[in-house]
Image (cartoon, rainbow over all chains, first blue to last red; front, side):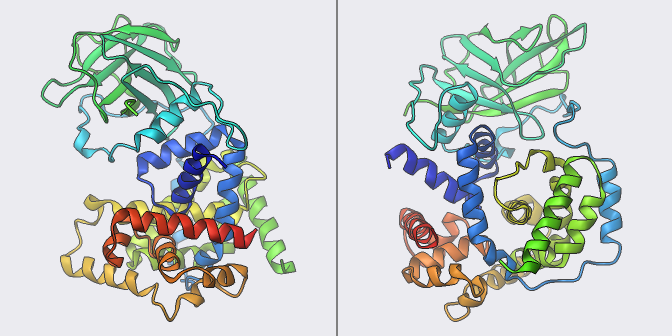
Length: 243
Length: 187
């Protein structure tokens, strides 16, 4: 048992007990999706604690509950099917409205994992040596990781995509960050498709923990207004890497 | 496991498979098998009927969406479904904006009702008759209370430390050590 495993075990405990913030929960679920041993560990603990849930006193469902639910389900697409893009791009997200930043360690862990580094919950662990100042895992509105941005804070950033994103002809993907509400969203660069790329953005303040990053779908060549105009494909908060 | 329990687990597995393959009758089957008990769980955490029904509805929509991602071998379908509902309840409970429509009196009575769930006299009822109850009984009182406050009453780390009058780090370490002992006892 090493320190890393203890950390992951503690995350699993917090996850099963419901002690994580929504953002941490999303990141941890991304980790589990990529690590069957971790998912099995969580499932075992969940099943062991299940009797606590089953002791609640049963309550009759209100009349019509099942029918109302079926009506909602009939118009709910299932995950795994192509995701419709959504989100209102005209409203700049305000960091204060977002769930608090995840423990940076967890975000770094999730980032390293989706980047293809070994996690190996069941065995040895290769801990990444991060060079960027912040790493942001961008999740879509279904909570699925879509892209990772590593911001080196020297006007360069790396973006990598962890799932395919369909870009219709005549459109492009644009990466943004929100250094502060006063500055508003700033473009980091325009990409013609979901390919790993180096972004050379404008001269911005050093990236901070919990700074917002997002990618939007824009007309080819980038947003005509200099601000995000298209649907948000994915967004996420940065985790500082000064650990 | 009794024959009834095995049969129910098989039916739940089938219902989740139905959902995964896009057949909405899977949701009806889950409600038929577990609906009242699921609603009871939501009611226990959220106290209010309206919030509990909303949580159950949201959770079932999530089950529908995510069924294809629930892998065979990752524990029971039942455990997965209850976990989705608990998470939904906790999200509602911790969403300040969501609860801001309630009066201070309503919030206080919700908080008190949640506290009473984990009284030192009645906690054994929560764990049922199985091995889990025996293993919880073997824990130190503070560790057991912290775990039950989190899992049954939906308390956060901060709420547990405030309720127990200890620093946050102490509450976290109670939970961590308690669950380690619990895992060992249950294995």
